[in-house]
Image 1 (cartoon, rainbow, N blue to C red):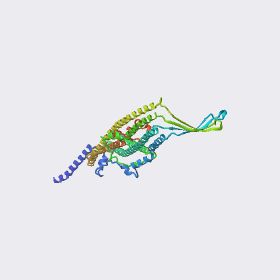
Image 2 (image 1 turned 90 degrees about the horizontal axis):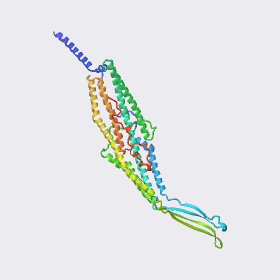
Image 3 (image 1 turned 180 degrees about the horizontal axis):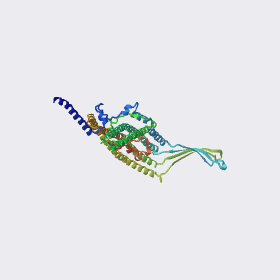
Image 4 (image 1 turned 90 degrees about the vertical axis):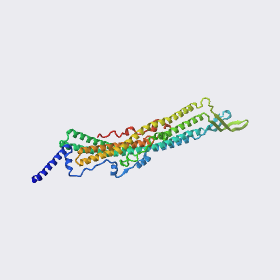
Amino acid sequence: MAFLTRVLTPTLLAVFLIGEVLRAQQSSPMPQEHMHRHGEIQPLQPVYPRMGRAQQAAEKLFTLQEALLVASESNPTLRQAEAEIRAAQSRRQQVGLYPNPTLGYTGDEIRGGSINGGKQGFFIEQSIVTARKLGRSRDVLAQEIRLAEIEAEEQKLRVQSAVKTAYYRVLAAQELLDARRDLSKIEVDHAETQRHLFNTGQADESEVLEAEIEAERMQLLAHTQENTLREEWKSLAAVIGSPDFPQAVVAGDLEHNWPEINEEEIIDTIAAQSPATQIASTAAARAKSEIVRAKSQSIPDVQLRGGLEYNNEPLGTVPHAIGWEGLAEVGVQIPIFNRNQGNIASAGADAERAKLEQQRVSLTLRERAATVVDEYANAKLMAAEYREEMLPRAKKAYTLMLDKYGEMLAAYPRVLDTQRKLYTLQAEYILSLESLWTTGIALEGFLLTDGLEAPARPAEVDRPVRETNVPMPERIMSPMDNMPRP
């Protein structure tokens, strides 16, 4: 009896263990290859998404400071703005110059007739400018110089904002390329797993086809992201003024040191301190100077003329000519019909328009700033939520599922599913960071972002729209747009 017990007990135990293994195989749709490996290899280690991998692998990095330096030397719009200042200074010099005198010949009865008379000589004519007209013109052109100087400062802001925006778009595209390549690898692994399941009868052909389609889609998105990165680099190279600049890996950190914007005060700050506001104010001052100049034009200038003539007519009975005689003339226009009233009225209307332009620019800035502030606030909220809440939880879920897989409590497809969700969230996080940086830079730069738009001339600075351009809407994507489906 004791002998039978010693023989049957191990047998029954073996039967029990075999039954448990068979039940585990039936309840878990895990590929046979992965199941057999569990007892032979170390448990899989979690691989978390991280940024900066392209920077770590690069031999040399292109920095934002380098981009700004190249732009300061090569962007043509900066030289255009400087040239416009010189042109305005030259115009001011020109309008302040006194009119040139006129030197001429005069003659009367030149042939002399029967007595051999006649007069010949010369004269000098000079206009005497009254009512400080030259000073009034210099005042108007001084305002134009100021407009050109503000425009040059604005152009620097425009170029700097454009370079920063293009730079961070390249950085985001660079990080997003790594994320989409990771998603592509996950989907390829998932398709391979589904094929193993199909071979063991644990998946049907439709599941294999769906997995293969998704793998191809992720590979296509990775390839299109490569094109996007190349496009963003070309955009950066153009705005810095060096279109042939070789493509390089850019250095930077999307996750930290975000643009800190006071959402309650930024709209008032932009409306009050933007170069567009300063330009509108200076244009109004110029319009007032135009009124003063137009009024001074109604006061006539004095025309002076003097000279000498030699009179060949005999002097009485003496056989000698009368000789040299002086001449002098003084003239002035009488403002009876033309008192410059039309130009004065036109200048007054322009001054009224310039005053209203100040109000229009302020309202336009507020309107557009409000939209960008909303985009900034949403992007900041999303980025913080991804970084502080969703990504940590997704990492934890992925780690727990991997642990269960190592303990043979979860199938490998479930591990891939949690990993896919983690990396999808990472890609969305990168897009939210891109939106946060681009909108923050736009707000810091008073909504001036087009670094290749030509600086306006003083006579054109109050034309609509160009003073308050904002980031191109099609380039600011929501983090939820164009995202891989889980």
